[in-house]
Length: 329
Image (cartoon, rainbow, N blue to C red; front, side, top):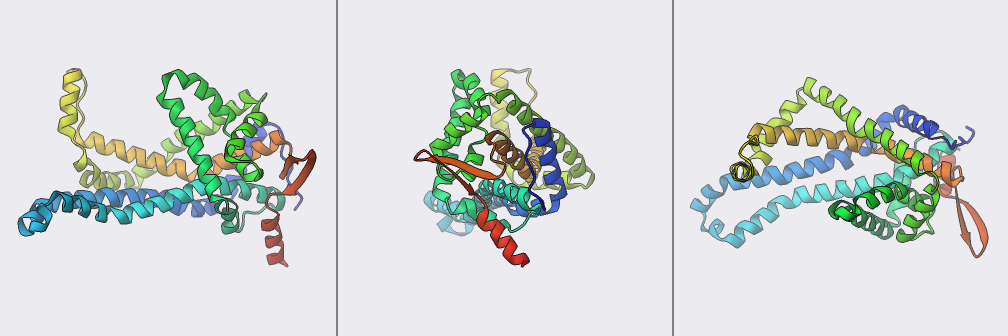
């Protein structure tokens, strides 16, 4: 198949990303299955086992003096939540890796027209784990500062647009350091901020609002919403100090509606459904920004870098492409 030429047109970018994602929907869902549901399962194990231990703690303390010691109780809780935390941490790491690996997957699709060999694409990120972690730390600091410091809200919002391609730069320009990825992203988007904002808004509305609302209806129809509500009623809701929170609300404003266990349960159900839907649509967002990087960088699937005044052009996914060709031969 001839190589697909990426067009510098934000409408083409969005439609192409939707086409790539939708035509390979099941493969992407399979790839995101553990990274998304593993986080949900891990957290559910943490809260459910903690709630179960708390419920039976008085009975255990009556039978065994061992459980009357505060240090012992804390250590018991730590041991109980370790399995859930390990599952959550592994799934969370795979989720972060997936955002970078899908850049390589997109690059491979543009060349071969196929989605294949997920482990090899994943390796393009995991072989540079320390740099990737450093990039996420810097990005998290930037996002946190932009949210927590009011004076930076407007500035942070602007730079958020210009730093949206930092992970694509990391994937396609491996010579860049974590800090260099920010500068390179700013350089690429400079002069294209408005179009980048439009893409961000359109994809955000689809994946964070429309898809969430649509799948909420499906969850209601299949009774999954009711099931999750029962799970949260027996786990997280029991750990929420509702009476204390209501007392604080009354002290602040007596006209406010007080929270109830059902409201707390509904809140967590909606957040869980939102997280699952947003998680499974991560490939769509990653594909979109990978295509946008290629459109603005003008490499159409090839990485360009300047070292010693010389222009070096090399295939980012050459090893993956060759591996696929060898398998076909």
